[in-house]
Image (tube, rainbow, N blue to C red; front, top):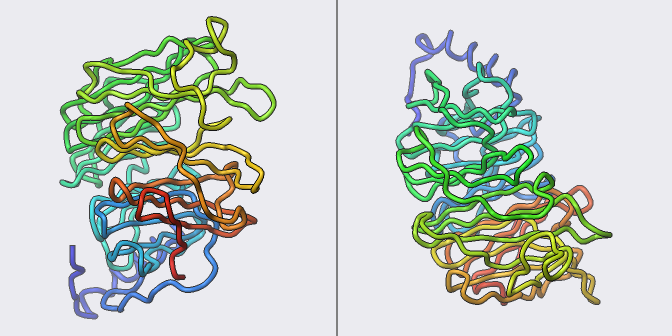
Length: 369
């Protein structure tokens, strides 16, 4: 949405209100009419990255949100403030929400202001913005709320314990629901989050130790389960996927704590690819996830991929110096603008790190900042 030009007389009160809003949110953006300046310099710690299209993308972290409209060649700063941005959800240029580490949701529509969203709901833990302006907000207690527009009103949805959201369209989406003493389950919606039904419940040993996250793309959805139980640096994990909108789920890959019937879960046919699993993303039949996999070269960050909906999996070599890669044990983000294009962001030594590949991981580069 293009910002409206107002006369000084009509805007006097509005400018005062805007100043108070920015002071309260700690947020600043380029002024109306000002040409965006390419970002240059050292990046602060980064936590998340998202591409809406192969050209339009966003990465964010400690006091910063950056936007690109040319596939990552040039990045401009659209947020400058005191908040750490832990996740973003944009639907296009100048239209998106961000979630701060202290549970605030802020909306941006271009111009010079970030507007608080759903303040009356309390601390937020997850959110999703739809292209038409409707949205979902998950509170820290797992309650899910829906609104037709960011200004509300917000109505609670009859589903409990939500932890993670991912949508493949404006109507079809997936979420992780807490299982209490059981492992988390996967629920699905086909009406934009207004109603939810059970889709999948894995059979896992020590079920109370597991957490999960979801990623959706087209007819496919992926669920990555990780366990807090482990030995030394090893943390068990297992990935599941559906290619038919939830009618059938199939185990993909994992790293069990023990093999055979005594394991944390039934032993996977492809049990390898790292001692711990991190962020993951999907695009069509391609999926990637990050893992912690020490090797003699010192590259502690591994990347595992499939290009055929999970039929085969491969370890993708990261031919990058360890010092140029994000630290696996810091917040880290992964995005797939296209099946062969990968972006990884995070931090190392307190500074932000971003690397990308346009050939499925064979070669990597850093953006020119």
